[in-house]
Image (cartoon, rainbow, N blue to C red; front, side, top):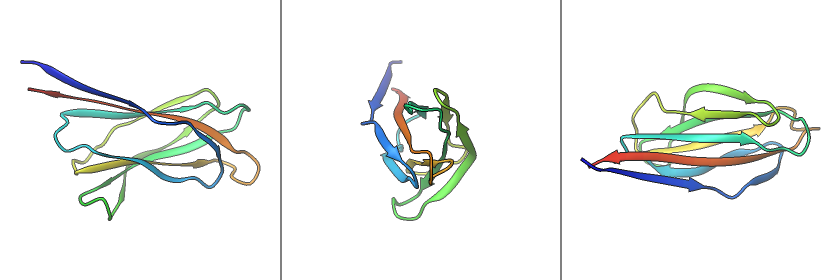
Length: 112
């Protein structure tokens, strides 16, 4: 048996206030996978993030917990339901006064 891995570092998201969805991945074919989200804000502002999944890339549902990521904190987003696509949804906790910067990572593996 061999293990094939994927490791993606997305471009930093800076100046996030209202946020939105981003970093969609097709996860079909991966045995295990995780999004890692790091709050890399230059000031102590909190970010909110959660996982969305979709069977077709058009219709999205929230899957799992909503995480508040403190300044310099990290969250791991793991699906509880199996569907073809996954993405991260994110925004600043106080969108009016507290823009955030996020670094997002995707890691997964398959056994072949």
